[in-house]
Amino acid sequence: MRYHNITKDDMLNGDGLRVVLWVSGCSHCCRDCQNPQTWDPNGGIPFDESAKQELFLQLEKPYVSGITFSGGDPLHVNNITEVTELAKEIRSKFPDKTIWLYTGGLWEFVKLEEIVNYLDVLVDGEFESDRKDTSLKWKGSANQRVIDVKKSLDAGKIVLHTAD
Image 1 (cartoon, rainbow, N blue to C red):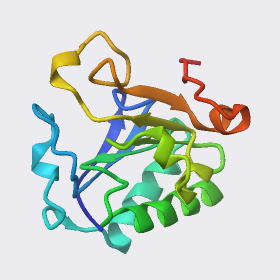
Image 2: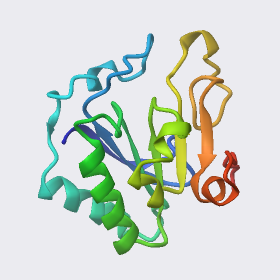
Image 3: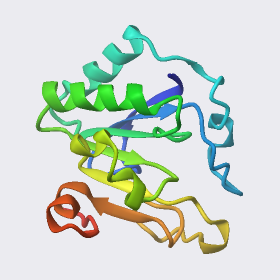
């Protein structure tokens, strides 16, 4: 897996103060994407032990609410295995931190992947520039859904996440 950036003290990509891992690789290539530089799966830099420790150092801070995986697409074929393992490790080491993930994929498919066992919130759906709405919280276009993963799995249907 490769990544472009680790953002610290982020308040835009999920509830609370977060650390964000911006991975490389996206096959959706949405028109007017805010991060087209992350599309190339060979772009950015290799995600190594040093980068993982940088994430963990941030997650150890009591005021950090959790981590958000974004990009690119964390569920891109080049990322899904490593992101799943990383989310699993974070869930184990930091059980009180929330894990958010942004993907252009849809819940109907993502819910079948192992990673849902470690996520709290999934923001799904491709960005659609003709449905762009800057007043929306945690998403860029009206078609995207901010899904409470645990409640959705329990209910067997999509339950949207609301601010606590």
